[in-house]
Length: 276
Image (cartoon, rainbow, N blue to C red):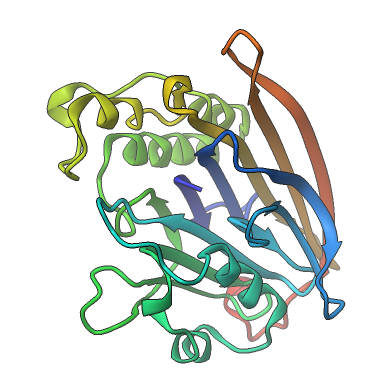
């Protein structure tokens, strides 16, 4: 996943709202959003990377949420472990974010940002292993609207700022359509607004839009996901919608499928952060 915006307790209607795009090479196989079981029997709701078995965004019936983006780097050696396994390990675990960080060998992975959430405790934290000095950087996340792409949390890349702005407008208007429009936006940033990450200008331009379309490189946005949480007197209701995309034989990006999943969770206790 290469772009996400999320709102934590920023709306009475949606205590949690996440909008995200996953960018990847088209030849890397993936399974769409679904409910599935780990080898140990834990239930996870996510898409899956077929090659390495991990995921980029997932939730569990216990209310744990994990979201991953890579950190843009040039000429880095291949890491021994897949970053997507971090999300799975968080989702199927029982430890809190601090314990998770202590038990993670950050040097075993390529550059990553990992958002860890727990609806039952109301705790949110963002972990990153870049810059590498000092191991994992851990940042607590209070209520508010956040943006994340292939740099540190809330780094003001143009597409990150645009998606955050769309998130705020969606919260004001109670309209999810604004977020879908923002996720599907293919407009690229001007050359003067491109972040300096070492990429050639033409490549940086291709990656500057919210929806990435670079068929000549065999790369682009593979799926868009919207997770909306509402609450009633008895439980949480999480609606997760994923649109997947593929290249047509003519090389044009087309919408391949739409998946919808609904999950109900018990309401957190009165002492938890999200019920206050």
